[in-house]
Length: 311
Image (cartoon, rainbow, N blue to C red):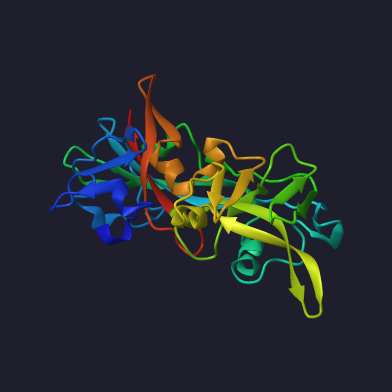
């Protein structure tokens, strides 16, 4: 895999010098350590075979690369959504199970937006960078793998997403002056609720993100029915909105009722870049910590390469 196969969630998050020897990342106020020399021989970074066994190392490497597979936990319940306008109910539709959804993007989003968590499962293989900045493979029965804090099949990190566990009812009254009053809520405005994580069949870690939902109504033939609306975090970003912060749009007030925690609301890419994934190597009874700082392309079978730097 060459340098072009490696990606970050946004090009503005990192800069690469002309010979690709130095990468620096900046996420919010955090700047990851310099990766001077990490990508000098990046073309060798392909999945190591079991027979490529490393017997020992004479030093603790500055950088590691671990192969993982992503496993998603799907959330479902029997809750419903109901939309009421001026006392008229448009019926109920399932929140997570099959039901009426908003025309367009929501029809495509719902089947892939029920993720409650994603595990980074270690495959027992990877690479370490030697003193000459060359990437050397190690497999599950190597010295390095045996001295890692995580074993093959264990989770390096579980990334959570926020979900909604109760039925939703949105009732509004439209006043003669056009003002919209929201009933039954402690706030005034159109509510948005955390729905789950979006995990598309094709994409990268930057595409796996929090999704929000809202009750609405739309016409089906000659009747109007309640429907479920869904929006990705990136949909708000394109509008200049920083979800889950409340916002005004076209004169209407929108409120996030059960906003996700910071760790839930970020993408998988942001999780890796901020160093949330941890591992350690024990050598001569001394434990050395490593934190994640970069990632590779996500394959169709959900395998990905995570890069770690020594703390």
